[in-house]
Amino acid sequence: MGLRRTLLWLFVFSTSVSQAIPRSEIPELYDDLDGSELALRLVLDGKIALAQRVHADLPSDQGSSATLARVRGLLAEEAGDLRVAERELALAAMRLSSVGRASEELSVERSRVASGLQKWSECVRLLTPSVAIKKAETAITYIRCLAAAGEKQSAFDVSAQAARAHPQNVALIRERVAILVMLDLVQTAAREARLAVQQMAKASDTATLAFELYDLILPRDPRSAQALLELAVLRFGDHEVRAKRAQHLFRQHQALMSATEFAALAPSHPQYYLPASELSRLAGRDVEGARLAMMIPDARDRFRQRATFDLASGRIPIVGTLAASFDRTFLGRLDSQDEDWAYAIAYSRLRTGAWREQGPLSPSGLLSRVRRPDLLEKSVQLRSRIGDCVSQGAIRCSFE
Image (cartoon, rainbow, N blue to C red; front, side, top):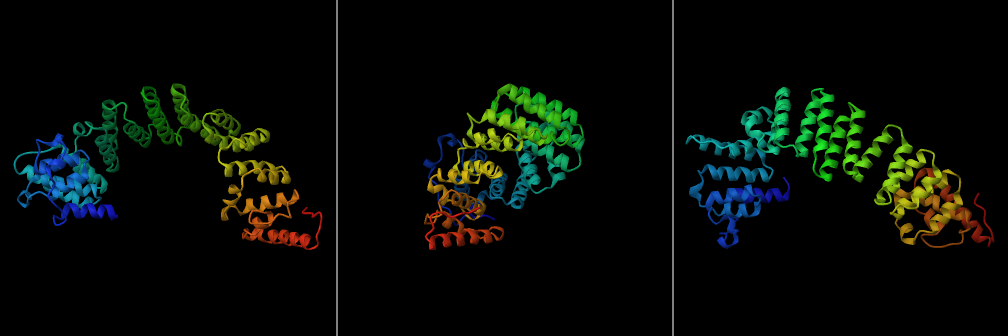
């Protein structure tokens, strides 16, 4: 149990750490509430720290209260102790039942805890469809419990009711489509997914939903999955949706089309220059790829990508010239994972006549960082050649 949860648990189940809380610290909104009812309302409103203090300040003669047991259960759930939460919430339900009362909210809370404990049948037993679909998050819990308990048809039915009740809830729509895919109703899933994307009111929700439904449907029906992204782009033109579409094109072995999509996005969203450059290289468009590489915002990525083109083309001296154009803080950030680039920069700069330079960022200094077995021998040879040229007072030194 983490430190925060441990402290919370101690606060809930020990009164020795508490001090009386002044009423002035309670928001006016709760002026008509007291005792365990106040603690419960604070918990339900997410004011956990304040609820802990109110709970700890309650007199011991309220210990048999159903409301107090519910408060203890919810605070235990918040602390991550689901077994204590299960026990306390069951106690609250038993106390209500003994006086001929019941609580839908309590049943929902118990089902949520049962789901967290993977007690699927218990989760199902505690809810009914009419109660579950009142809130989207409860419906999702119920649908998952039904599916996990093997009641797939019931999960299908409830997901349909819930989707009609909460047509703009992204998480619930995703759950509905996941159930359809699980039941092998892929075409129905694709049809409902398209309808949901069409009906989303916000661009951000559309993008999120399109991503999630795309991932659900892609393994079974790539064409329908791609159509979802096309539809989302058509509606809002969101750059993240377009980037997802570009990724799909690459997975379909259409590197050039994918590169074109990323390149179109890059001027307004520079993070896409790197994939646009790399995909251009893979598509055989080296000139375009090198041009895009020089627009990559991050200096480290920019150098790596551009140098990749030059090294692949045998233009080793250009890599040295390119390295010299970067500020020295970039070279200073090269780490153990960059030994290949330290070697490449050093070698290329030696080819351009920089062998006399001294210091940690000189060719000799960069070569001294190399420890990788496949590069170490070459590095030692180059450093030895530098030493020979310096000791002989050479005017020129060859590093072919």
